[in-house]
Amino acid sequence: MSCLSRFRLITFDVHNTLLQIRSAPGKKYGELGAMFGISNNKNQLVANYVQSWHKMNRLHPNFGLKTKIGYKQWWQMMIGGIFNENGTHNIPEDKIEQMTEHFMEFFKTSGFWQHCYGSVDFLNYLKLQRHIESQGSKEPPFKLGVISNFDPRLDVLLRNMKLNHYFDFVLNSYDVGYMKPSKEIFAAAMKASELKDLKPQECLHIGATPATDYFGARHAGWYGLLVHEKSADELSRKYGQTVDDNHVFSSLFDIHKKISNDYMKW
Image 1 (cartoon, rainbow, N blue to C red):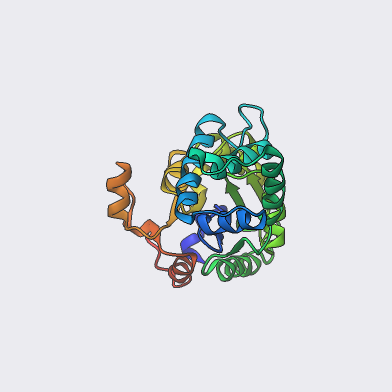
Image 2 (spheres, helix red, strand yellow; image 1 turned 90 degrees about the horizontal axis):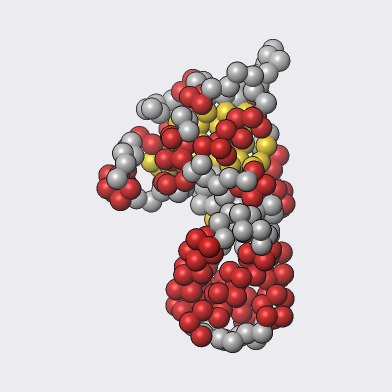
């Protein structure tokens, strides 16, 4: 794995990198409403979902940590917004609470999530390479971690999806107290790795969101790879910052293929 030999720490985002939702949010929330006897317009739910998500992140960032409402209340307000936004419904608060409890449990399971294309194979490859390269060494050649803007259910989710055993540590933004793209959460990952004298330029982060994963990593002095359907040129124009063409891939399968063939360009 010579093209990765410069890195002592490799971290991953979760959503649309390691795991993806099994179906569109509008459909999932529609199913949730139907379970509680609420008829829904799927297109309206999609619009409400986007509006509620942006509103909650603006007013109560990091799942309510900063405003001290807590992540459970955050999700209850989020779901209330989805179903009651714009007068779509007038659902009693106790039913919203019941829906939230069900959703939060379902959210941690394989019924809600599935593995992204190539994620398990790539993690197996990294695990094997680490085993091979660590022969006769006291310290592994690199460590693996997760850095995600997520609430504390992340550990359970990764365990349920049988991914937790690949990682030396898992960081969610709620427990760390900082969200990507802040430098603090990347610094927390370096500390969590327990690697002696680790430098930012020895770290690589792989994620799906340009602003938080790619630019966040680069601004922290790390290298970054992006899993995204758009080209580097499109992303560079959209964000007003350069995204290297060699750093954008459609899936972890493509990253795996390039790295295993040892012709990754940095």
